[in-house]
Amino acid sequence: MIKSLLLALQFLTVIPLRIKNVDDRSVGRSLIYFPLAGLFLGLLLAGMYKLLLILNFPPLAISVILVVALIILTGGLHLDGLSDTSDAFLSRKGREQMLEIMRDSHAGVMGILAIISVLLLKIVFIYSIAESFTPMALVLMCVLSRWAMVLPIYLFPYARTEGKAKFFIQGVNLKILLLSTGLALACVLIFWQLKGLYIFVIVAAFTYLAGRFINKKLSGVTGDTLGALCELNEPVVLLTVFILTRLTF
Image 1 (cartoon, rainbow, N blue to C red):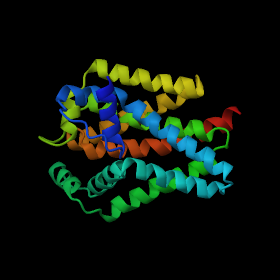
Image 2 (cartoon, rainbow, N blue to C red; image 1 turned 45 degrees about the vertical axis):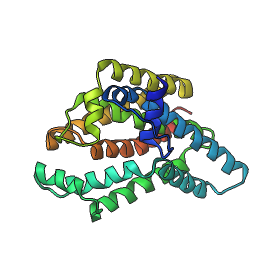
Image 3 (spheres, rainbow, N blue to C red; image 1 turned 120 degrees about the horizontal axis):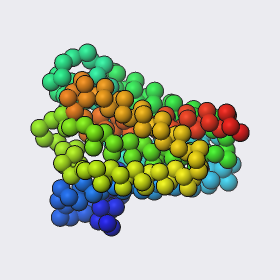
Image 4 (cartoon, helix red, strand yellow; image 1 turned 180 degrees about the vertical axis):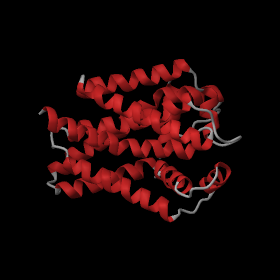
């Protein structure tokens, strides 16, 4: 259990844990704890938010700092996936060419625009959410976006014959998906009770539909597309929180 949790933190953050003797089973079991890795990131951001408020930083500055902090904490890993995925899918090429584009380490115009767009959306949504709901929104954003990588790993095949994400897909099973989902739901209920279920359903639906689209184009998912789904789900969560707080409070 501890080893799998530490692996999840090693995969999803810049924490230099350097876990040794990693096998397929441990990699697969680490998926269970993706929501807890997200919880760790979310609590760090929520703590930073409270500290910046105490230091009387302007709201817009706080939003920018939090988004930059998340990039630093994750090493920009998922943004890289978003960039590569955007370059590939917006190229209007065939499957094999899209897979090759995603392997290219250079970011294209579409990838750069995608990164800028997603970062701006996160900044403006954090800025727009009422102060009393922002810590909760940051936690749910990180938890659910990390869980959103587990769902397509279980549902869809791997689009390549080799690659880092292949080890996750080989090790996943229904039990791992259910346990990961249970942890994500527990976090949702703890931080926003039944209202959080609306966000969970929206994230699940968005991830499923986006995953089906990706699977149709690539005959599976890749590490880049999983990172893109994580990044896209972050503004989805923030926007949903914003809408729900305006509708119900």
